Structures are given as structure tokens and as C-alpha cells.
Amino acid sequence: MRTYGDLSFGAAQAGRGQKMWAVDNLEAHVAMAFKRLFPRVPATGTTLYLSDTDEVRTDLHWFMQRYPLKHDLGAVLEEGVARLAGRLAERDRILLPDWQPGAATGFRDGYQPYLFQAQAAAIAINHGSLLLGDDVGLGKTISAAAVMTGGAPLPAAVVVQPHLTIQWAARLEEFTTLRVHVIKGTKPYDLPPADVYIFRYSNIAGWTDVIKGGFFKSVIYDEVQELRHGRGTAKGAACGVASDAAALRMGLTATPIYNYGDEIHRVMDFVKPDLLGRADEFLREWCNNQKIVKDPDGLGSYLRDTGYFLRRTEDDPSVDASMPPPNVIDFEVEWDAGAAAAEEKLTRQLAMTVLRGSFVEAGRAARELDLKMRQLTGVAKARSVAAYVRLLLRDAPRVLLAGWHRDVYAIWEEELAAFKPVLYTGSESGAGKNRSVEAFTTGDSRVMMISLRSGAGLDGLQYHCTDVVFGELDWSPQVHHQVIGRLRRPGQAAQVTAHYLHTNDGSDPVLIETLGIKSDQARGINDPGVAAKIKYSDDSRMKRLAQHVLGIGAADEVAA
Image 1 (spheres, rainbow, N blue to C red):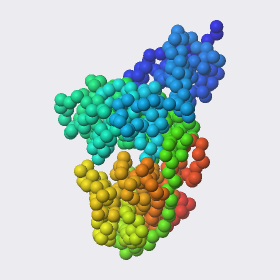
Image 2: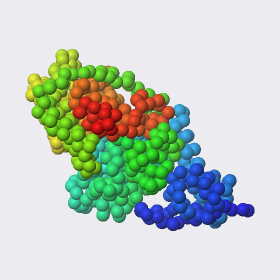
Image 3: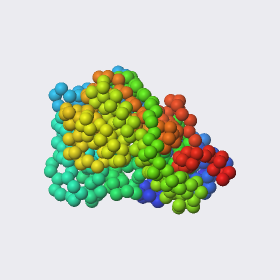
Image 4: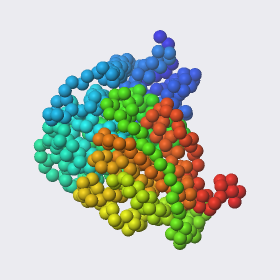
């Protein structure tokens, strides 16, 4: 039989030493066909390397039906083909409407996971890896508990944000018979017998040597977007060791994409290493530059098709409970020119540097301009926001008020003192956050000021509040979605109202425009095929902010 090149397996490339497929000596027209069909390989070069996954093995097997390559690896390829087919067939069976999981062992009497939670657990166990992207409020903690009681090898390590250790331990002990131990500190000690060990992202790095020994057979990352910066950070390096050593890996998040689509590669690296190839393979195949995924819908569909990404919303047929969509109020509040005037000269100087300074100068000025303009905007509208909240509290029993800057919180505390406001931000300890939640839910506080990026995983507010007010805005729409999800989740008996308060000055106009850019990157990967509400451009958000400050357009800036 004629062959068109050579195929080998086992060459180790840069990275973690994983085996690679190597294709060499391709005839010219076959090399062109190979590069078209495998866009993750470089357009130049003679020896072409591919990361080893069952998906790659299946694609190579398929390619060689047309262009046979010289090799003696038929059994290795066919193993991958068989595993992939079996895994996906089982996934499809589990997701059938009539699939029945049976009673969940390890759950206490009176507690059972919902059908959609049991489905997620069964798929994670079947695949050995799963990124569970279920929407906010659909009980991803219980899905993880079903994994750990349903066949995942134990003991398991669960990694959570620092303020959620108590909540996770309490939930697991309430629902299951699993023995739980919360890891204390960064210095290893003799661990007591347990089925589940709960780490903080902030202390796991100290336990790297213990993790390296393979003690933890499964690893579950809550709010896995915490690892979106990859293995280069201390917590990322430790979690990378945990992923490499574990037999089962699971990530939980409703927002795997916070900013741009390239984050999904780093997130998936902890859940299913090599699924998207090495970083250079991913960038060639899916991105048009270092950040932007060129086809978010295509990538989202691919991740689902592999079976390693599962996402449901409250409207999915498999989700028992259905909640009405949030009621959105978009309200323009007054701008306090006096509060902004003192900083006007500095912001204009920063804006000019962003547009016309050197690379280093522009970068430094952009960061300062972002911080200064958002703080200035928050302060300039803070009293108007407080007035809006006071009006809202005439009818609403409680209000969740989202912001970012300490100066803004101080104004809100003063203006809303009669309602005994409490704080839930990055500055409070875990115990302090718990006290704030208790005061807001069962005490005499009617306002909880929550930092835009500090509420992930927070549960219990939905029984006491239906109104969330965004007194400051974030660059990422997923942050707003997370905050709304603190109220819009199972247990909420009424429709949630999200109040977006903005001004026509400061950074708000550019923030509102830019939110559309990031929404589409997340939308395509999370929900492929759903029409984008806002088209996006690739213009620099900071250049647009600088142009807004100076009152000029892009054409004016070029002309200048």
C-alpha cells in the first residue's frame, strides 16, 4: 500500500514532558491537506507535532483513511478511537430525558441530588474530567458532592476561594456522609483521616510536596476561573501538580471566561490537560491574536462535543426548577461635577499619555487612568446612587449594593447609615463576611455593600432579598452576572431586579460600550449558536477611555 509520509509516537516536546505524535516526510500536497485539517500545527516546518489525546488519535485515524502514513501504531490509534466513541456514547445515554441515576449513595436521608446534578456527576466519573459550567445558582456544589459519593477515587482535594471553606464544609456535611477536613494554613502537618480535604487557593501552594506524592486521588476546583492566569502563579503551579497527579479532575464555574477567550485554554489545562493542545497549538487553531478567540461559537461547540464541558441554564429541560429572567432597570443618575473637578487636570494628562506616550509610558498611564477614572466616577455618582437606594428601600425589605472603591463605600455608609449597612468585600476576613451575611439576612441591616468581585459562591441571600443595585460597573459582564446570581438562584421566590445606575460622564459610557466586547467572547464559548446582542470591535478599551476623557474620536486622535 502506498504511504504519503511517516507517523511516530513518543517524542517529548517542551512543556511537562508529555508524549507527542510526530508526522514527517509528507508529500507536498499531503502536507498542505494535513495543515488545513489540523490547524493547530504550524504553517511552516517539516516535522509536525500534535499533543496526544483520544480526539487527536481519532482524527489521525480518520486522516489516514485518505492518506496512509507509514507506522506500526494501529493498536494505539484504535484504542483512542474506541475510548472516544465509548465515552461519548455513554455521555449521550446519561443526557437522555429518561435516564435514571438511582439513589445516590453517600447522601443523607432526605437529601438527593437533582437529576441534572446527578447527570453532571455521572459524566465527570465516566470521563475522568469535566468543566461544569452550569449557570449561577444551579447547585454545582451538590453536583461535586455527587461526584465524590458516586465513584470518584478518594480522598479528594477541593480548592475554594478563602471565604468559602466554611460554606463548603457545612454543605458537604449537611448533604452527605463524607468526612471533611478543612486545611489550616500553608505549612503541612499530619492530616486526620477524611474523604475530602478543603484547600484555599491562598494556601494550597504550601502543600505542593504533599500533593506531588499522589495522596489526593481526585481534585475539584470551585470557581476555577481563579486559575485563568495559568500555572505561572504560585497557586497555579500547585494546582497544576494536583491535576497531573489526580485520577479525576473537575472544575466548577458559571463564568469560565472573565475577559477574553484565551483564558479557556488555561482553565481547561487544569481540568483536561492537552485537550486544547499546548498553548502554541491553541493560539494557532483558535485565536487570531494572543487574546481573541476568532470563533467562540466553534470553540464552545467543540468543547461540548468532546464531552469535557457541560453547561446548563435554569431553562434547560433537564433542570427541574425554572426561575423568571431578571428584571433589568437601566437608570441614569446625576453626576457631581464638584466631586470630579479636583481630578480633571490629572485625568486629562493621563489620557494624553495613553494616546501619545511611549509604549512604557502609555501602559503605566493606562493603568493609572483606569483606576483614577473609575474611582472618580464612583465618587461623583455615589450620593445619587445612595438616594436611589433610599427610594428603593421604601418598598424593598433589603438591597444588595455592588461597588468597588473604598471611597465610594464610605459615602454610601454615611448616606445610608439609617439602614445599618454592612460590607462584604475583599477586606473582610471569612468570619467578618459571615457576620455581614448574618446581619443582612437575619439581623437589622437592610443594605449589604458587596464588592463586584467578592461574591462568588455566596449562598443564602436569595431568601431575603430581590434587588441588586450596581452603584459601580466592572469591565467584565460576567462579574455582574455573578452578583445577580447571589439572588437569582434556587430558593428565590420572586423575580430578581438588577438596577444598573450609570452616568453620562466619567468612565461609565466607555465601560458600557466595552462590556459588549467581553460578552461576545464569553457568549460564544458558553452558549454557541445564541445570537450576540452586541457586536464588538478590537479597539483598545483604554484608548477609547482616553478619547472620551479628552472629548475626541479615534479619527481626531490619528489626525493629531
